[in-house]
Length: 173
Image 1: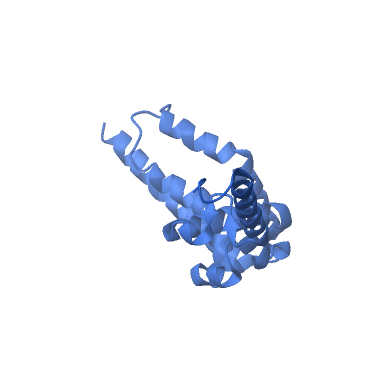
Image 2 (image 1 turned 135 degrees about the vertical axis):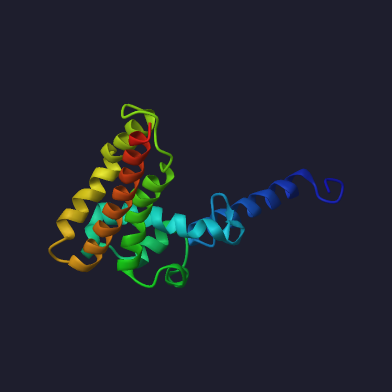
């Protein structure tokens, strides 16, 4: 290539390529990690949930905007609606990811009440992000009782099932 183009020509080509890449990143057509289409499709719901968590923590349920969530996740509004039908469904998914999934991941009953699994669960509940979500849930309960009630019911029934397993395992010892 350098025999066809001179050194200064190569530098111009590289500079133009970098300029086009920077313009593409700023316009949203490509992320720092590469084109959007290279990101894994199965990762999108998690990316949307992470972006929504930040949005809900910053703006609450009422002030959260789906367009900002899509932008934070680096996807189009249509992509967001492909995975979540509305803000309430996304709100529930954020809480499911923050509370229900971690509870279900700890389903193996720990060997003793002072085990690492229980400490891990407590540390998770005391984490700053988790506490912020609990505060949002409490704050939004009056204005949006339906999604908040569904979230609370799912989290509590999941925790109750895990606690039942824990008690049964320790009674059997």
